Image (spheres, rainbow, N blue to C red):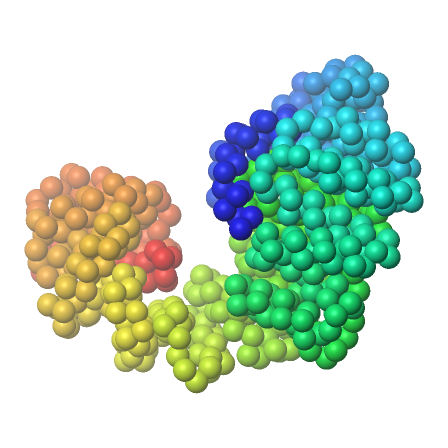
Length: 593
């Protein structure tokens, strides 16, 4: 399958041998856990900066993976130093990364007056020409963008679509057929020659190409979709439906496949996948871009996906792939903008809305996220994916009563036969019930989750810890936590549970041993630091205890825990109680897994 073949591309081969993209807004930057880039600069911001100031601001925006701000600052610096080739190149690449292709084209034209061999600029200008139906110019520029296996394939496919646009489908197919290269080339070659032949009226030849591509990789969505569409018009609905049914078994419930099944089972003849040279070129850029996104080539994938959307702004799969790329680099604000562009008529709109809500929550806009999901659920009350997304957001925002009710909706919507994978729904509902002071109901859900997955470490940890924290089922609870630790010895939250369990039963020496291990694994967690401080105090290491509590205080514990920690720093622990620390609520919220 294609995925197996693609595994042979190393990241180095993708980013170096294929196409050098210098200065892409997030190349070689550290991973960020939050979308914390500065707000987009205003005109007054830009006017007030010197060339050096604009450059430094642009570099900072690049480190923060904020392509829009980086492009604005680089262009500002370029206006005051117009002959600076480095600024020109960085402004071009940042504009391209931001999806401002019109601006990128202007900058590419300037670059080519000084460096006619710049392959990225050639590619961008060539795609502009193709969009404007200047097919001869498009071929000339695209053919000069070739370098390495990936761009060789992309340029050949784009040049082929330009030939088709110019009215020469025969040459388009012949040139694509002549391309030789790695073993994954034929799939793309057959798919695109099939599409060219199909919209040229050569249905029989197109079918041969689609069938060949399908035999090479029947797990590739666009290959299956193109072939099924061809079958619906040239054979019968049953044959077309069979292709969709086979794909549905590999990847159940994909919206485009579900739409295809509805159409073909109703006997409808489906339109071709593309209907123009521009749509075909967009499909080529999307196909390679989406594949690179999954294989660690985010920089180059970004370029291809933005160019695909320049040619076909409403391409639903290109939009999803671009948004997914932004998610992978922890940029929810950028993903939000892309998800909002999904056409209302697309079968992928529902998926986009769910992901939009998830990213809104990640950007601390949870109320908007909840509103969107409730609207999706109102239209489809048994949409388990949407219901689970809503429950997860409510749980993360500590709306425990709400999330308990939401997970109940998910459980009620499940089929009669309970799937083992549904353990997580009972587990999450159990968390919400416990946190909303409904322990008896929570315990039932935890036991149900274990019935479905008897060795699930997070459930073992949660239930075992809860029993010990309440002083019940101590032996069984300790055994459960040990089983969880055996499976997840490097999970700081679970190791903390074992240490805290020893603390709760008065075995402070063992508590210290395991809590020190938990701190090694999760040094930034305030609750684990608080627990270790308590254990240190009980074994007489009072100075270390106060240091640990101070560290817990500085790590921003939950609001209700802060005064308790400050009281311990001032007065230590009272002699007549074994604990002044609370249960590990972070772990109980399900964040440990």
